[in-house]
Length: 281
Image 1 (tube, helix red, strand yellow):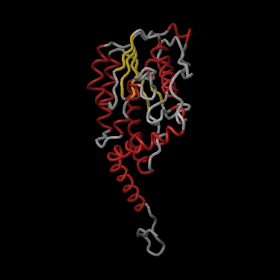
Image 2 (cartoon, one colour):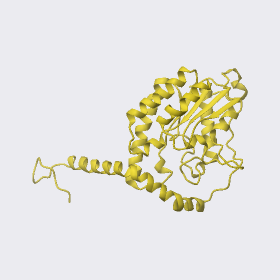
Image 3 (cartoon, rainbow, N blue to C red):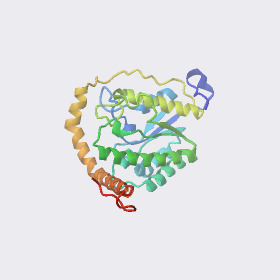
Image 4 (cartoon, one colour):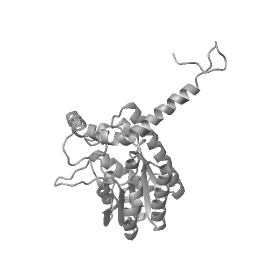
């Protein structure tokens, strides 16, 4: 694949005059606070890099793939965007009604409609959240399995519609603490800048103009120390884990039970009683 054209070399590409951002709280910009209040996030940084004259962020916290289809997509189509960035799906993995088939149908519809409307689309494949937000072993395995299923859905849709995709698991620095806000669930300012740069690269590969590269130099925000992370974990992290665990625990228990059953089935016969399953010590 040819290297993306950034800066003056990109002037011959397609101009992105209208950029639309869809998705959940990451797209909202959580983790990258503005000095006067509110959130910035990767969207405005990307819009500046693309030289977009119109930028609309239609995302909201708690959004799932189905709600993007029902609520955000119609407005996005009406804006006739040149490019759309989409970050959504993690909220689906944390719910008891997680259904990869439905997720595929919804995501395929969203991306398909945007492509028919003439927009370049870029989305993400997700990283292992359990490596950033430390979870108990069973919950980590349960969440990792669901993220794997979600990524399979995303990969299928990306391939079918030939859109850009940023693999967060492979992004350099994605597992560094500096890339994450104090909650370890949303990117920090640096993390949002990394996302904006990666999205710009994918759009450049698709032939879009990127007149200005996204800087990774942070320009604001309070310095986050390990004490901040510990304080957040005690005050907010544990309650969050308790709420989300109520959905993930049944799934985690199912994984453990299946692993135990499969392990017993795989137990080799004992020498004393050939052909029978040996009992655990």
